Image 1: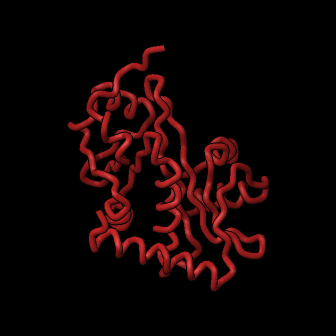
Image 2 (image 1 turned 120 degrees about the vertical axis):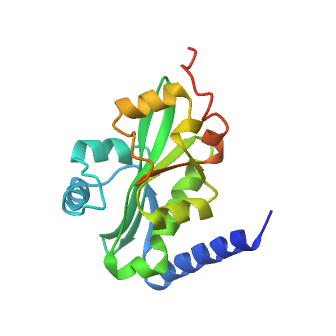
Amino acid sequence: MNTALHMDINTVIEQAELYCDEQDIEIKLVYKLSNKSLEIISERSKELDTLYFVDIEMLKRRVGNGCFILKKNDQIYGHIFVHEHLVKGHSVFERTSLWVNRECRSYNLGLLLMARMTELFSEFYLISVAQTPKVHHYNELLGMTHVRLSNMSTVLVEELEKLGKLRDEFSFKYYVNACFESVIGQLKYKEE
């Protein structure tokens, strides 16, 4: 269904892509980054309170799952990663470490990165655990569903707690893609 909301999101994403073209900013899906780039991203995550600190080894694992970057003249202008969690034998991918250079923040490049990653992982269990209202809004525009802990299976809630991902639902919200939503209440141990 192509409602006005869907047309608006598509138009906004097209405008973000056009901005990248006009500014010679490349949108790349990468599975490897140089140590120098990983060091910069790690340091950034330590300095910014909007990002959780991620060390270089963790970033290497995350980039192996796929990472979208915005790049111009060998400088990274934005990035988004996914982190793979194993939940009772199921791979659950968490969108994480979204960052866009301050100069470009008013051109919806964060939404563009989120859209690309959400599309890439549409056939996998994808979750977003976020505190920022803007990210909640973007998740909704991208067709992700807000789920409460009470809607999740006991197994999933226990695993989120073990992973340190169980959050205060007043400050944080959980969003999942359609693939994950279809099993969120029934997720159990995976049979080998």
